[in-house]
Image 1 (cartoon, rainbow, N blue to C red):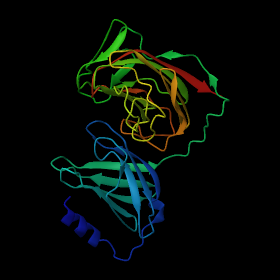
Image 2: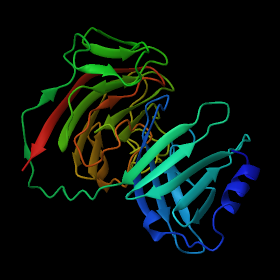
Image 3: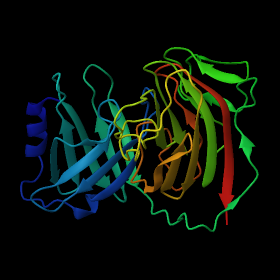
Image 4: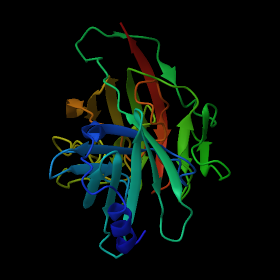
Length: 308
């Protein structure tokens, strides 16, 4: 949609129709036929005021982006982005009952339909009362049993040899057949130079894996909750060395320990990240291994469920 079309669309709405404040809040979005099978996330604030604003994942490469343009009239929402390289990304939606029913028309590609539901309140807290169950090994050291491709009809691009799971360049992302809710996770991994990967927890929240030894930490660093929570320090080892994550997820609270150093301590997860393939935040979800970036190996992936 061009800016001219956007203006015409908004002009067609009743001029004095007040914005419905029920549009405010956080929305988990499922997208029909999205090429990478990604879920989206949207937050709207100020609907019903003169200055609405919002945040969105994923308009570009997966960051949490502030919305550039937003207009709300009645139950109708239109928001958009203007990439630095040119173009105009426009998303439209209407509040239908308790859902957002929307469309997105990428330039030169078929339109996408999407549905947003309110992000659920998750009351579980990491209060020290959770009991460790029996560990579950998600990688048996010899083959890809228990894993499948995120994007169907594409080669996996992963092999298991010498006790390690290794990807090829631009491999498919992997998703575990098993699903989990609250858990502890132990992962051992190794990266090539300038490489990049990630772990998707419950198929929704990415812990970044990045070759960034010696750099200042930010929300894209090794051990970050991608684009949301930065590590307290950089604890990365150089490329080519084996490293370890110890991750604990209870409700929306996450703790990340890299190579024995705590990076995030009970950080609050506001919502989905770009790795998300499952928008149902109130339900157990799978583990995702990101393989579509750089070279990465895993030799241990173990989940210990946590129960009351």
